[in-house]
Image 1: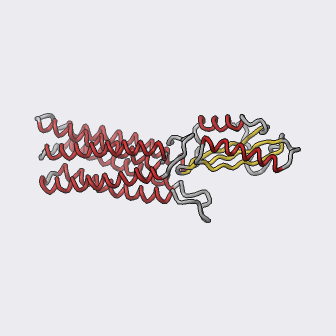
Image 2 (image 1 turned 135 degrees about the horizontal axis):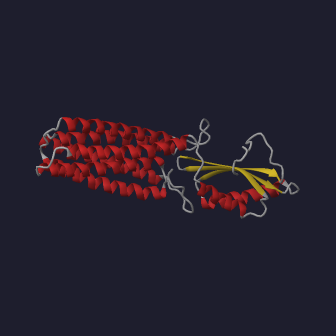
Image 3 (image 1 turned 45 degrees about the vertical axis):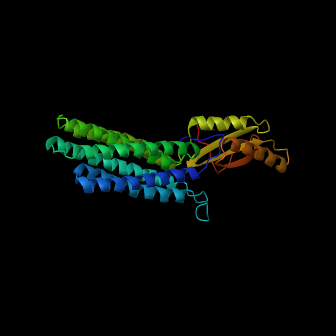
Length: 310
């Protein structure tokens, strides 16, 4: 799961900046690769051009999904549209899985039927430029993620990280082949990248499913919230703490116990102060707090499961 920010206000516009930067980077790479292919006719360059065209389609989809996820709540989506990030990340995981399978089958085929590689230097230059632009993109995405912990951008960053490794392996295999090295180096590199694709697919896919299935936030976050509640002496007890993440918004709900003899307005003020205290640490949170009279925790809304932690 992407990091849960505290103390600093989340700025969603940085997620959009990262997404736009990715799209611009891919467009520049497509232009460079089209020029290189028309001059060389290299099959290797054509392959990287095809990869960039696919990246462009994915970047457009991620940008649309991100913009949709940032839409405010409406009549039909009272909790907002943040889970679209989970859908986009799941798509990204599916793409990486498909790319990994393709690389695996292609590598196995080339082990059996080695192919002659031509236009080595053209391929090396194109791959080198791709690596430089991809590293710059990953750095920008990392910077933006510190201000906008978006699952969509996190999965996109993982995707472009694999592009760096992929093009690095292209340079290595082309250099080895150009200097008379064994033909199996190229497919061996492809298998290594495919394995890395599968590792990333699992990570991104699990994070996407966690968000879509409303998995609880990490225990460290829950403990921090509990610590904030315990700082308030007017809150005599609490239970049924529930947390989840939707897009860049975290949702927190729990019941508190207050003195049954105080006026409702006073109890409401206790809860308001507590809510503001939590928001000081988690500014981009939506909080629901239910008040119970001290000692009376039975209700039909959220039955406490036996053995479940608060």
